[in-house]
Length: 99
Image (cartoon, rainbow, N blue to C red; front, side, top):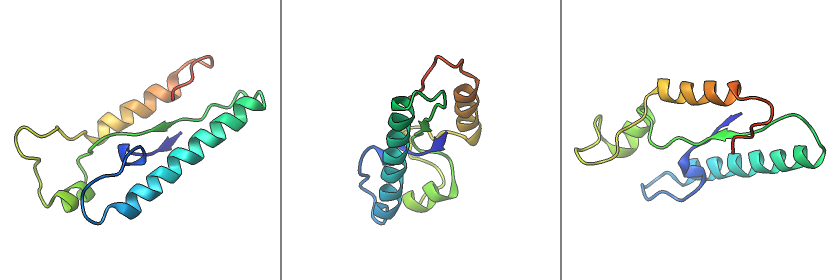
């Protein structure tokens, strides 16, 4: 699996995030390209990426300039939420493709 971000699927509007967004778009394209190639080859290898939204990290705090998202904004995910998503993806049976 690859760890991506919703930034890999759209362009954010915070100053200075273009390089981050570009790198996450690259992860999205790399993951999907590899997944398609493996399917064409008939491989049993599965490829996916996890693209969480805002995660409670120092980077988010630096971008927003805050340690708490204002009331009414979206809640930040915790590291445990991402770990649970990874665990789910790795535990799916062979016939399940998580995209």
